Length: 144
Image 1 (cartoon, rainbow, N blue to C red):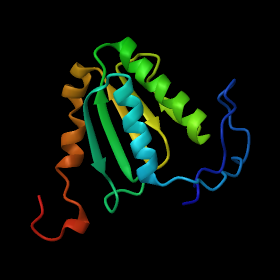
Image 2: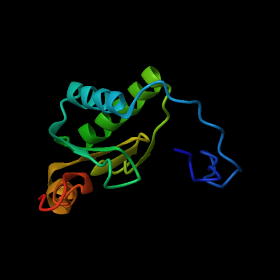
Image 3: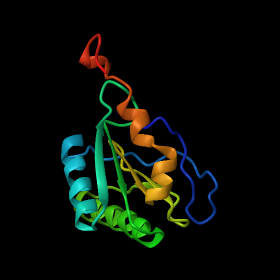
Image 4: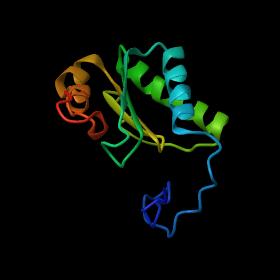
C-alpha cells in the first residue's frame, strides 16, 4: 500500500520539508509484525493484551493491539522498548503520540496500530469495545 502522505516533517522543527523518502519493500508480513509487537509488550509485562483483526474493517491497518501498563512510567517504557525493538529487528521507524504524558501512547507501526494505556484511561475510553463490537464484513450476515 502506498503512503498517501506527500510530505514529512523535520523532527527538529515540526515543519513540512518535502516528499517522504521512498520506503523499501518490507520483508515481513503483517502477521510477523503483530507477533513481534505482542512478544515485545509481553516481555515488558504489559497487561490485558487484546488483539483486534482490522482486515476488511479498516484501511488504516491490518491489526490493532491494546494493552495496559500499571503506571505512566511503565506505559512510556513499553512504548519506547517496542519502537526500539521494531527499529533494531525490522528497520521499522514508528510514529507515536502521547509518550510525554504516559496516559495513552499510540504507536503507528504501519500494518499494526498499538495503544498502550494506563488502566484508568483505558477503562474511560473503552477502545476495544468500540472495535470488538463492530462485526467484520467477512463474517457474513448476523455476525455479532
